[in-house]
Amino acid sequence: MLLTDLYTPSVQHSLDLVGIFVFAISGALLAVRKNFDVFGIAVLAEATALGGGVVRDLIIGAVPPAAFTDLGYFLMPLVAATCVFFLHPQVERINGAVLVFDAAGLGLFCVAGTTKAHEYGLGLTQSAVLGLVTAAGGGVLRDVLANEVPSLLRWDRDLYAVPCVVGATITALLIHFDALNALSSASAAVIAFLIRILAMRFGWRAPRAWHRRSSAVEEA
Image 1: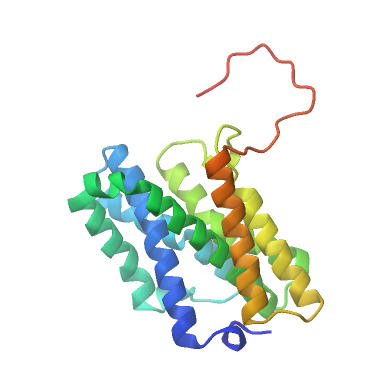
Image 2 (image 1 turned 180 degrees about the horizontal axis):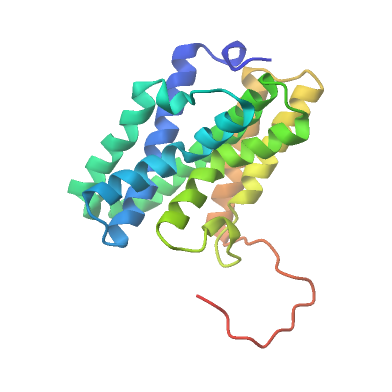
């Protein structure tokens, strides 16, 4: 099943651009909080929005990566960075809405990443892993560049990797049972989205080491 079989190219491209824009907003906002200059804001926006997809494309041999062949993919993070540069107080005030759209982008990208990896001949497990990389890889790169422990690895952050894993796994199972279509793939994305939203709403976190009794002071 090809991505172009699920959605028309224009719909797929529009969904990609929306996800890229929202991911770029989160990267640019972190850069502002870190007091980066305009170049740093643009770099973090680009890395957050495109990093996961670039890593995926390099691994599967889809070169040059889509981020470097489609000008829209490259320019959209710069648009987001410009908005944050001039309007970051206003953007911060609607951060809740930004997080909702970020969750939607996460759902879309884990499905699209898994599907594209499978198109290039990877097995279902490997495809699901690259679905996770597509959705969350940019955020990891963002945090590393900003000299922070990636949110993906921190126990004190609401679930982020788990929704990606669930969405990617459902997509891989749909491929296995030859049930992947526009409706089922959208359902997988929605499930990942809802898990992320519920995690933010109720503060769900992944468990730490079993029977952990360390008296060490927690790191911030």
